[in-house]
Length: 394
Image (cartoon, rainbow, N blue to C red; front, side, top):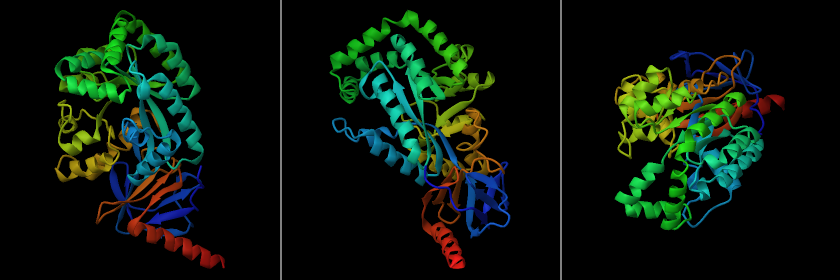
């Protein structure tokens, strides 16, 4: 890992603590938040200091790995680029959403295992706390033992269940061009992709037993698990009964309402907020937020959407800044039971974001007490302290 910041005390900023802003100091020492008494001070007057962003689901990294369908890049440099991009947008914890699917190719088990191994290797030099979230297709039942072994081996702590099989059949019938593009992206012919779908559908009767086996294993391993794209309340109830409590991207209002009625947290995509609705025609995230049915926002396919969604909610009068920021920080942290982050309290992990009040620019990101991003007016403030400390030492 990169070195910890020299112990510092951030002063002059408006600090988001316990859902309100206060003008107080924040100390950063050896990766933890302290009161900072007696430490060299960085004057951040004119800035906000807020908890680091916790992104529980993002597949935008795929563009770093596969910028064109026929031009794959090595995982190492792709992870480094994703790491830097996350830091520049205030993300301090970043889950890379990797499929475990009957599609194979970039979304098959082999690729998932390669990504998990690469992330573990990258952690030694990471700026951001990079982790992997697995999106397990429910009909890949033959690979259940392999999935459980991979989760344990690579220390995965978050899995969601997908069932996009019938959606694939509908696409093949109604949108042949889209189906052809999907096949090309998977490195398959259309006939090969259709054959994989047919094979997966033949496993339908084995899916319930497979899900129960996975749920039992995940409970034993302490893995949080949920479901993705629940279309209705009945589907959410089925997943809730087996312990898959997180409802990620419910596609209809009733599915989200059923999740909340059952005490299950709901996650929605930040791009949905920024664009004013779902690009797939599903329920608008803003409507769920208005009704108190959304516990957190995730980057989905676009990392910059996380801070942009906060400002969209603020500018449209939907939420005040402190509550909007909670949807990308304390809210997601609670969903995964991450008690060491998501808030700015003494003794917690030093994950924080410095935001310019004038420009709304993410001017600095500190992840685990390490400086992962620094730019704009904040850079001059931090550097002036460093120069002052050097002169004093001389």
